[in-house]
Amino acid sequence: MLPDWPRAHGGPLSTVDFKRSPEDFLVDEVLGFEPAGDGEHDLLHIEKTDSNTAWLARQLARHAEIPARDVGYCGLKDRRSVSRQWFSVRRPSGAGTNWESLSLEGVRILRIERHERKLRPGSHAANRFSILLYHQEPLDMSFDDRFVEHSSIVTTEGVPNYFGEQRFGREGANIELARRVFSGGRVKREQRSIAISSARSFLFNETLARRVADGNWNRLLPGDLAGLDGSASIFAVETVDTELLQRLSRHDIHPALSLWGEGAPRSSGKPAALECEVARKWPDLAEGLVSARVEAGSRPTRLVPGDWTCSSSPDGIEVRFTLRRGEFATALLRELFELRQPMV
Image (cartoon, rainbow, N blue to C red; front, side, top):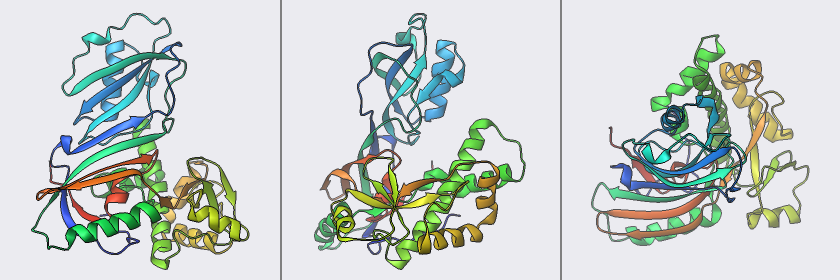
């Protein structure tokens, strides 16, 4: 079982049912660029209901009679959802595939364009969410006021940028998969990628949890990394001066932690010492990542949602917001609620 990593803004306001049906969780992928209109790839904007992204990619490859490696997408979307996302399908000639004849339950093609490049993980800009949450018990009269106050805090100050539980599989099964990979077990290429990603994510969450417990997850410390908002650009912080504090307060920059691998930690001083301490606590994962020649990376410690709106009813709450690529809706929602997902 995964740890219950600490929250930054106190305990949850209530327990809610999450994803009673796929229609309760809507996600719309934002590419951040317009299709080129020409090139050797079909770019498909697809709405899928209660289906797995990787499974759908395989079905597209089968329909187009091409290798699965020639289908690309920007990121995995929750299976139990209604997701609108983009796929690229390599077809150099621009002919030979009739997409109108594709017939898959819960799958609808919304738009077809041509594009010059294959879509890669992380090549999109953001995801827009619309989520219904259902109250499990009657609420006291103060709930609405507390919800508004708590929402204001998490949407202005941000929340810890944890990787969501879905990254780790049911009951953390992907962590055990990583241990099998690092001990020499043979797995499929796709499973190996999942295992490595889960191991890095787990070590990051463990380190971020320590920063949350210490109350400095959203503060810059000497030796920290800092990341530019909405960018992959990272720089080292030697001294925390007034200018950096101002940039931090207006969300122009965010503290960042290392993603473990060769060259980690990328920080220095006390932040690096903490990262190394966490790595020593989980040596099979940390050493496995290095042995697998995974290059160290970094990730911001703070998530600040955009376009936040909410409405409530006697049954529950609907929330709408936008997150940048790589950020998890569950990391935001867990600061407000204890999420209970019915078994399906």
